[in-house]
Image (cartoon, rainbow, N blue to C red; front, side, top):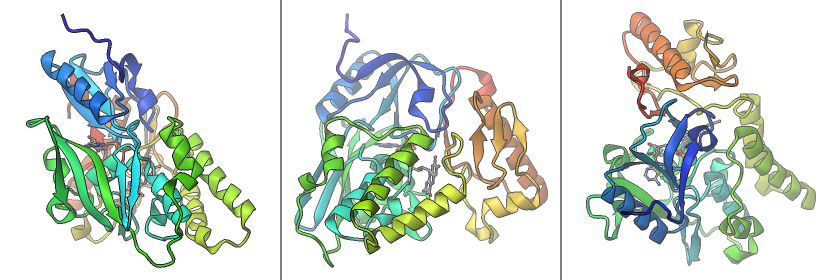
Length: 350
Ligand SMILES: Cc1cc2nc3c(=O)[nH]c(=O)nc-3n(C[C@H](O)[C@H](O)[C@H](O)COP(=O)(O)OP(=O)(O)OC[C@H]3O[C@@H](n4cnc5c(N)ncnc54)[C@H](O)[C@@H]3O)c2cc1C
């Protein structure tokens, strides 16, 4: 009989611990590999036991079920943290927190990644979603993406940026979400003003590789990175390299991004409509609408907050409420950006 005693495998885990929504019931299996070897062993074990994997990273865009399917391995790449700098190419593994890219950029004296500061989630999840901040996207400076195809799990495959089908909140990985697991990516660094420092001179990166991950809960995540920025400001007053990050702090804290557990924007914008979902929701006076312990943010009509103890069913009720209102008033149904994982209960099916 196959043993379930494997490095990187945890049993009976509350998925709420792995999600910035802080929602999700107890999963029978959660895989947290730290290396590609551990990842392969977990996938092989799951395959042998007929358990299907569901991939995730930082869980900042996931709505986990209240009653997870016991025949699922919830597999996160968030503990796979590795990096390498070769010339003007930066390799990072899927688990590197996106905000760490901004820290690396600062260490190297380049502006390539400042927009990822305080962007929750990992590089793997960011590539899957083509994460963005205003008009800058994680895909902008990407060279290629390395992934494992579960149909051919023996080797790592590589896809060039051009083959990744990036668009607004789009990538080819969304078309292959049950089979393609991103393990790493390479970025091209700009050379202007680049400091000749080794990545090992960036202590925050070394700590990360030693397993000291930034906190997942939004308030602690924000304090962690804001604390880093303020420490740098303390070391070098008037450091102009920190100005973009200071602006991001003002913007995101001002919009209460970290005040309650959430997944950020719930719906993708539909640019053919001409206005963002939040603005359209405001016209229907949807801010503040509450179901159970979930509420549409009083400051942003496209954010659903967990007021404490909300469950997936509460959030789904609100999602349906917004979709119905949009359908009635505007004649279209907004597409969720948040990835909704179905559980055992039929109440989770829309
Ligand atoms: C407060 C807040 C603010 C936010 N602001 C923004 C914003 O400004 N811009 C923006 O774009 N997003 C924003 N988001 C959403 C979120 O940060 C991004 O979507 C992010 O890219 C998700 O990364 P993740 O690692 O948490 O992915 P997860 O939420 O864990 O997963 C999301 C999807 O990616 C897939 N995935 C994750 N890792 C892998 C992998 N290694 N291989 C294959 N598939 C994978 C999962 O299967 C899932 O379908 C915000 C979220 C929060 C909570």
